[in-house]
Image 1: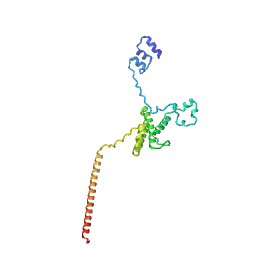
Image 2: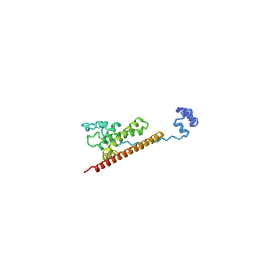
Image 3: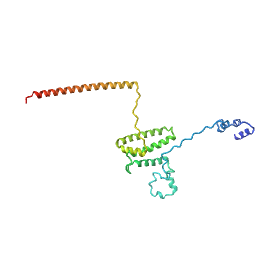
Image 4: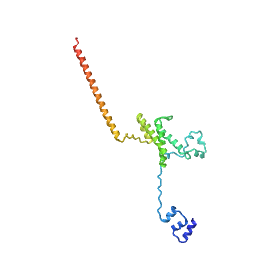
Length: 236
């Protein structure tokens, strides 16, 4: 192909004609350059900041951190056991523990509401980072929505029980709690008729209860009057 192109150019042919004779496809970038077509500018994807960037690469993995005599190991082995060679799952595990340490009540606290919220927060941020790169991953998006709903429920429970702990948890984990939107239903014709019927029934029941209360008051007043008359008529 290149030999045919060189021969055509030496004969004095046009560049476009020479490439067509050489069998170069029209969609080739070289062909488009010869025709003077503008090249498509590829947009650079913005760099996504990860919540795992603050983890030092020299830190050991979670399962090797408490191994005895780990400091005496060779540097090459340490590097293999560090976060530099670790997967993203291992880094998320360490991030979970770091977030849990901020809100943990005691060293052995692993099941309180604050610790559960910290674990879910780390998982949510990992899923959000994944979806920024793979925005068509519907399964992980569904998982993220389920985890977010679970965390909202835990935050709501913690807010009702201990408001001070709730505020501290949101501050330490950098969570912005928003109240759920009020339920809004589309006003269909059937819904409007049903609502009017319910209001009419409520008003009728209210009137019946008011009449019953009035009758009870009249009966009590009569009984009190008869009792007073009897007291006045009895001789002392």
